[in-house]
Length: 232
Image 1 (cartoon, rainbow, N blue to C red):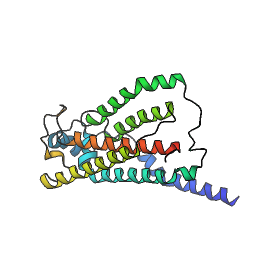
Image 2: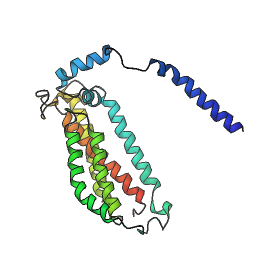
Image 3: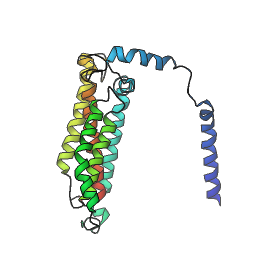
Image 4: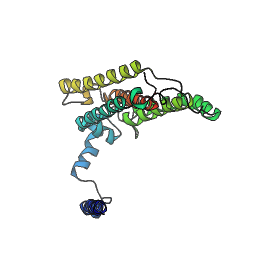
């Protein structure tokens, strides 16, 4: 009984804390001063047609670095917990229900398209909605399809670790180059910003999103492979 009372009180407390935010929620008639500054300055300063990309990759690049670090920590935690020893011999035996013909055929048709679409998303993140995290998730979806259609298959742990490590190092290196040769960490103006709306624009943003996409794709693929429970 006491447990139910405490849970009810906790829920009411959260509701009271969020109530002021709910009253203030809504679409403003015009953007605030900070948002207006981003909208006006991002295309001119960074050459990015997608202002969200300019904010995420450049203006708040340290936050994005933290997000990548959190994802790495989550991947390491999953890999540490889901081991052969902890899951037991049955989970690691490789026995299971075979994939259907529909799943195997769909995997063969969709894998290449998903990988290309993921690459498209993170190489065009400075032009259209999308970016490294979204593109990496799409690529991991292609890996998931293959793991489901061929349960006996395994990813190369060394290859995934190499891609993840090199991508992370490249991300930090691009950030430091921005701090050294431009105006701040992850400042994309170490390369020409080009013409707004063209593929070769926004300085180093396409490169930054590309390494983020590869890192996220490798990390999520590693989690999916660990969830199978047959890692040596």
